[in-house]
Length: 452
Ligand code: NAP
Ligand code: HSE
Image (cartoon, rainbow, N blue to C red; front, side):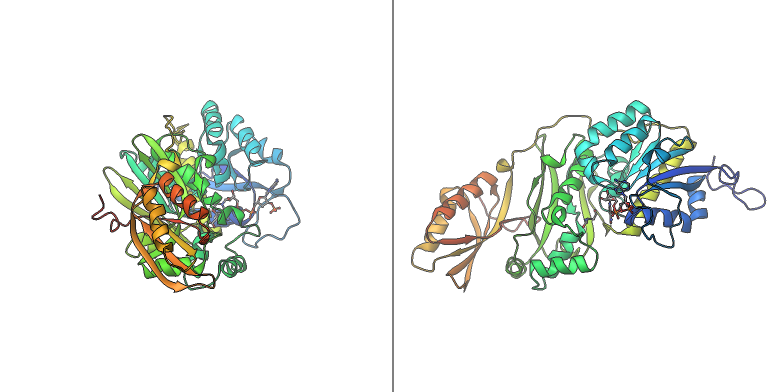
């Protein structure tokens, strides 16, 4: 049936007109959950038209029933999960409570009871995706999870559906808004600590922002994207992860002077049948599309063998952008139910693939050193790289620090193990005062030119 057909009075036909309801249960009514309730209410008719059925939140699970909720979100509340899970009328469970437990148990119980699940929980997907998809398959229902990566940005379904005909070569991008905001502020010369404080005051960073600044949030998201892109299970623990907390405004200033922007890059690529997946602070050339993505915005680039490179960008978090993704998934479930299709959004991890050992992956590196300012030190530094088989692309020494000389180096592409060997040698020199957080250089072919 056409979802948008009108009868002769101009009204809509079908389940929507007949007053049928798809009843959903929300597990959580915080930032995202209240946004979902608000969006379903605000766009009720429009959503019913698109879904072919009215959608109603029957109940929401919360921890604290007395907490003051937004005025635009009037939903019956419960503190007992079984009120929702055992309700035969509730066909779809929307998990927006976060964390691993009890969210995992509740989702598994919902699946066992034959309920479809929509979740925004990257922590669960990136750690227990295998178990969740197996349970959904056994129960003949679906799990949708668009909001788990990139907030309001459509990326999961484009990867699973629209780009399914491609062999995906690489997925990379900025998938954490908090760190992107902090780095954008540091690019203006503000310290990491002050930028983090601003992020908290603006409500971007959580009270405990460690998952963001250590790169763990980005690791969960790139694990989910890599699992879909390469058809093989990637868990958060498989992601090599370095965060931003040891960066200084000076690193960003040097990068800027050299023509780069610093971003926390989540990257997954397939190299000779093995998966390389990592989160690292990275220098991107100013002309790179991701270099222009500032503040809390997110952006993800996908490189496919047929499509070439495509970019998805927008608001990667927040109440209404994230609700937009969740409601899109609910509508998709409504379509599946009305057309009697089950298990359409099944697991896409068809194969087991090895991971590239991090020390074997080739990258170009940026590193800032503080060393004694005396004859022979620069030669010793250069020899440490040369002995490790690392070729230098750019070397700058122009500033005295309180301790000595500051040297900023960008290498030609080299294996991680060669770069680490050079750093170990530098570390052992009595002339070395400090080796600051190294970063990779991405998306710039300039340093490769002329390299043999
Ligand atoms: P939140 O504001 O902290 O809301 C969590 C909700 O779950 C609250 O309503 C809380 O109840 C309820 N809850 C938590 N633990 C519970 C428990 N054990 N029993 C009963 N209720 C419980 O979290 P959020 O920011 O909406 O995030 C929800 C999920 O969406 C997370 O998985 C997060 O990673 C994901 N996500 C969030 C964003 C974002 O921008 N916030 C973006 C993308 C994805 P009370 O209200 O009573 O405390
Ligand atoms: N903490 C995340 C971020 C938002 O800063 O992007 C939820 O994914």
